[in-house]
Amino acid sequence: MNSGSRPEPRKVIAALPQYSSAAGTSRVTWRASSNESVLPPSPRVVEAIARAGATAHLYPSLLGDALVADIAERLQVTARQVVVGGGSLALLQQTLSTYTGHGTEVIFGWRSYEAYPILVGVAGSDAVPVPLGADGTHDLAAMLAAVTPSTKAIILCNPNNPTGTEVGREQVELFLQRVPPTVLVLLDEAYQEFATTSLDGVGLLDAYPNLAVFRTFSKAYGLAGLRAGYMVTSEEIADFVRVASPPFGLSTVAEAAAQEAGADADYSARVLRLVAEGRDRLRAGLAERGFPTPVSGGNFVWIPLPHGARELEVGCIARGVSVRAFDGEGVRATVGERAAEDAVLAAVDDLMATVASSPGKTLT
Image (tube, rainbow, N blue to C red; front, side, top):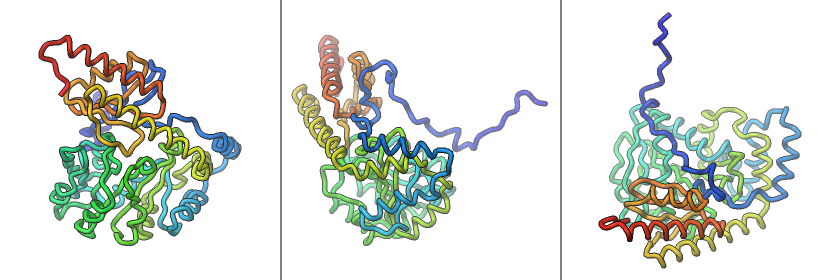
């Protein structure tokens, strides 16, 4: 037996970037690095989790039928148009696996959600990242210009993660009108509940049968630890994605929690209020310090930092809060916890003092 032999992954998998983890999360008081809800699930949701846990010895429903029915009724679509699963990210992966593959291309804006290149690579397709515009929003004209006969899908993250920037309904409709009907547009609306524009992708489905909308229960509904999300699209696309999806893809506990969370309007309203106030508060504090930030449609604020992103991350950890740093680009900080927002501002003050005492050092 050759002791040096071992199974080798597909070359495309071995070359993929790894999803990064925020630094210092085990050493801080506040986690502002993963865009989680600052509130734990409501008592109603906790009770639903406990009830569902009592039947954990049984398989969940095959397709998350009860949750599908609730979502379809709330959004006024047919049940066949809704696919649920273990987070919107899993559903995006299943959709890419269904519609893309070797010899195809997938376009997405960049910087955007760092999982996109990984998902595209796993599906066997070629990633085509298109730089964001100067204002940090998706450059829709450039994305259209990148379409080739090999393009099978376009991912549009709106509001965009990590910049928080948004494209409005009129812009998206003009974009959809120009996308070839054979190209699938995957509209990632993970932060839709926090958006400042009027765009609601579900309202565009009737006019654009090549559109699929992805949403999650992780953010506004506070269920990041349970992994529940859904896709709404045409019945035909949904049918094919279900074929490619693993059976029992949503746990009984996650389904029960998502049903209750979706019905608990008071909880969601409280989260949205905390986030809106936190965004305004943190952006105002940063502006006072000479750091302009884009209007955010997420539960976070993006701090553009061509230089010093890692230094600010280290400073935030020293102040007891974790953030997400992107070297050479900026820092993303989740909002909603006032003490954490204050810690970020204090870390910015520390960084500014360091720069002021270092001749030739700059953050811009």
